[in-house]
Each structure stands twice: as C-alpha cells, then as structure tokens.
Amino acid sequence: MKSEDSTAVYISTAGVAVAKATRVDDRYLLNLRADPIERLADAGPVLKTQCQAIGLKGRACNLVLAPELYSLSLIEKPSVADDELRDAVRWRMRENLEYPVDEATLDVFAMPESAVRDRPMVFVVAIQTQSLKMLLEKVYAAGIGVVSVDISELALRNIVHGLYPAADQGVGLLRMTGSSSVINISRGEELFLSRRISGVPIDDITWEDMRERLLLQVQRSIDYYESAMSQPPCNGLLVATTHGWQDRVCEYLGEMMPLPVRPLNDELRALFDICLHNPDPVNLNWDHLASVHRNALAATLPALGGVLRNIPGWKQSLEDVAA
Figure 1: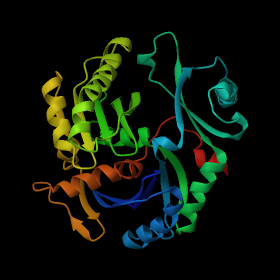
Figure 2 (figure 1 turned 60 degrees about the vertical axis):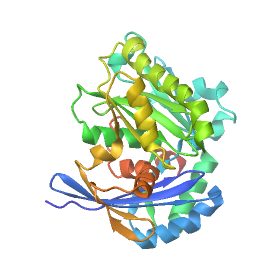
Figure 3 (figure 1 turned 135 degrees about the horizontal axis):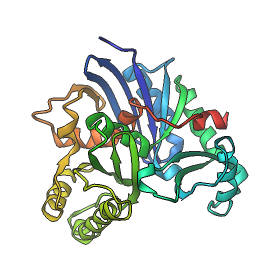
C-alpha cells in the first residue's frame, strides 16, 4: 500500500538538505539532496533549487534544525502540573542562556523514566525566537510550508527507531560532519542520551590527534548510559560521517570497543530505496555504494529522520510557539 508523501528540510550553518519519502508496504522510497553553504544567508537560494529538483513546492515539511542553531539542556523536571511545565522551565532556564529568556522559544521532552529513578529529568530545547522566524521565512520563501519543527537529535532517533523498533535494544548512532557531530543512544522510541562531540578530522595528522579523544567521548557516553542510567548493555553503534572518514572511524572504534560497530548505510538498506540528487539523480546501489554517496547520505540524515517524524509527548511544535 502506498502512502502520501512526507517531506523534510534540514538547515545547518554549513549545508541544507531536503527529503521526500513515500511508504510502499514495508519500504520507504526516498528522494534526498544535500548542498553546502558558506553561511546561513545562502540557505534560501539553495532551498529554492532543491525544491525544484525533488518537487517540494507547495508541500508542508518538517523543518529539522542543526545542533549549532539551538541549545539542548538536561534539567530536573519542575514539580508543577503539566500545563504549567513550560512556564516553570522558562523560569529555570533564565540563567542558562546567553540571551534574555523572554527572547527564547522553548520546548520540553522527558527523559525516559527508567533512566532517572527518583529524579525526573527533562530535555529543554531553546532557540532565539527571532532566529527561528528567520529560518522559517527562508523555507516559506522557497515555496515550502512548515507544519512542525524538529531538532537533529530527535530526527536521528527516528532513524534508529525505524531500524530497531523493539524497546529491548539500546543502539548508539554517531554522526560526524565538519560543522557538528553528535552521539545518540536510544531504545525503541525513547532517547536516553545525546552528546555533542568533536567533528570530522580534516587530514591524517588531525585524525591521529583526535581519534583517542573520539574514542573517549563515545566510550564515556556508552558507560554513562549503562552505569549511571542503570541500563542494559548497548547492543551496537552505528556510524555515519561526511568527508570520507566513515570506514576509518568504524574500523578504529570497532577495534577499540567491546560492541559491534557498523556503518549506518549497511542498516539503511533494510528499509529504504534511495534516489540521491547530487545534484543529478542516482538510484543508490546498496551493494556498491561509492564514498561520495556515503558522504551525501550522512549529510542528509537529519532530513531523512525528519520525514519519519513520530515524537510522542510534543503537544506543540516549536513552529507553533514562534508563530
């Protein structure tokens, strides 16, 4: 059975990506495109080109923001009624932001109960309202509507949930790009941990200097999930990088860590048939995936996760708050 198209736009300070997905039975047919930008001001013209390339004009998308565009904090949940939570969190965050809290758009989602014991915790997303409105205007100017706004951490969680829907499998996802890198650990639809880490190296010398630091950051994240959160052992780590570093990162972490480490693209083939516009359309052959295509896939991942949006507990999107 064929579903209606779902669309997403991802904006970062270094690139813009778009995705259009159609579900056919148990598989997703995806059109993806990512383009680099020098600055955020360039996002609008690039979006217009992408919109024409994969047919997004007039469609309503899920806008996914890159980590450098917002802050993500973990705080103890205020002891207030649910309808008062957002106001209570806003008061709590007034000293955590580099700008007045009255200028912020906030959203809140809970950390899984099994991870916090007697101290309920919540994740708090904060972005300057004016910055969010500016990003929305760029999308609207390209002829694309916006029905919701996501953050990268939750968009990436959507991918892992699609690949490993069972709640008994804890899976890490490491995404590394030149502008922002993050490690998530999720189980089922619940996000337990998300940390921002070092970006991809720029050359062999940089790699030698950073690989032990990368290992330490990943290992500490997994140890925290298993020990401090009292969770079962993590079942595996998926890796996606830009700039041609995926094989080297996978090989090094696989040698040094006591859990399976696999390229994410090896898992994506289970659910997705992908046409990658780079800029000419190419139907990906999962058995012979070129390095340039793996790089492009890593660049589009938040947009890919954005079309799979299914976030329980978000009663109101960031876009609604900013309107």
